[in-house]
Amino acid sequence: MVTRLSNYFVRTLREDPSDAEVTSHKLLVRAGYIRRAAPGVFTWLPLGLKVKAKIEGIIREEMAAAGAFEVHFPALLPRDPYEQSGRWTSYGDGIFRLQDRKGADYLLAPTHEEMFTLLVKDLYSSYKDLPLTIYQIQDKYRDEARPRAGLLRGREFTMKDAYSFDYTDEGQDASYMSQRDAYERIFQRLGLEYVIVAADNGLMGGARSEEFLHPTAVGEDTFVRSAGGYAANVEAFTTAVPDPVPFDEGEAPVVFDSPNTPTIETLVAHANAVLEPRADGRPYTASDTLKNVVLALTHLDGERELVVVGLPGDREVDDKRAEVAFAPAAVEAATAEDFERNPLLVKGYIGPWSPAGAVLGEESATGIRYLVDPRVGEGSAWITGANLDQKHAHSVVAGRDFFADGVVEVANVVAGDPAPDGSGPVELARGMEIGHVFQLGRFFAETLGLKVLDENGKLVTVTMGSYGIGVTRILAILAELNNDEKGLVWPASVAPFDVQVVATGRDAAAFDLAEQVAASLEDAGLDVLLDDRPKVSPGVKFGDAELIGVPQIVIVGRGAADGEVELWDRRSGERTVVPAADAVQTLASR
Image (cartoon, rainbow, N blue to C red; front, side, top):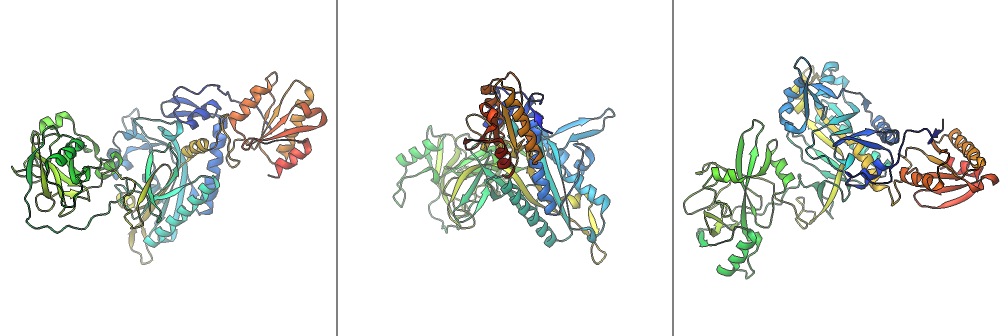
């Protein structure tokens, strides 16, 4: 049945919504695909649901081809499974918790690993039942502190999440590759450029974790890649560790006056002015200094802990890398109150060594853990704080004058850093995560008791994989990629309609021919939107057609009396006058 714009539930807007930051948000609201219900929460209108269903249809086809079966869990879930896995607590403020009238705890599911695990435990008990891959397409909920960019980062969003179940690691590897290959086919069918990057395995471990990132300037993820083929997001990037530097007793650390040098920039300028020149003749730079950054960790039980991280002075702490390194604790910079409670930390002049003895480290006077960047290797010498006001020290050697409690990867990655696999220097790019494939291993199965009998009748713990695709995020990215100054221009694979027929003018012949063309196109198997609105000017109709973004448009107007219509390719802008019968044949064959 032809869909008629005269009674279709859609209203277009001429102005961008005031809260929209990115193109997809602006156009999806203006074209009548979504409406804001609350920050990060959107109402889906008929046009939006049609595009969303097209994306989901492609996903379902490729999941079926990969041998996965669809299920559907509720979004409202009980506390107990998440308590068993520890995630009721570890999610912190990131989830929506609620209680029923009897005081029982529930949450709005941010993800469903626990429920998938328990479902398989309930129904399967033998290795003969495996391998198994099941998936759902379901709404998820996360209490984003700063929802932004429309559908790109919201509090309610639609995901496809799949889980594989095997009883051997070899089986898990095969299931993982099956889903990984399916993801490549999905993104290729959607016309989405993607880069597969190594990702952090997170708290649950697992043998392998990879993200599919779409390179885009509006992306929230930074990833690195080398000409030799290495690719990783910055959280998973590992620093090439320098070889140890031999050292003898040599020159002991020397404390020197450094008034008004609380920053690396002022310290470097002062060092070049007052210290003996370097042996190689080059001036001192920020990379010769050891910066000591005080971070505050808030653990899940509410305990607040200070840690000090030593890193080369030409590096900064990357918030995302720090978040991963110290998870599940929350990380922030130490406050003025933290320094007041720890007077041995001389702000601006903190160092791992001082003439008065160790100030940093678990065995020190403060008891504050001291962690270092991998570049602070044994035998490396530094200019650093002397833990005395207005004083620094030079010739401070790691492994001789100070020792760290551990190594931590929190420093920012910069273009030119060597890839850890030796494939050359890396470059940085921005991307948006569109998919994630992850070998969970046995964490959830062990925690929730999912075991099966193997060939020898012995109970073995099942190993799992997790595979996610952000459906609504992909829709927004497609809108970001497919638009012009007039509106959306959808790819045919996900467009809400195959063809839009626009009847223009006041002549009844035009409206009659438009009805005939629309009906013929429907009979040919195309999904048609007919703009049959009376008393609406051609300019308004054309403006709406450009905004809505159906890829093929048929204009029925002045040539209707002669049986002619105009074919308008929305993407190329090309317009061609043809007989109405030829238009139907042309469009039906595309």
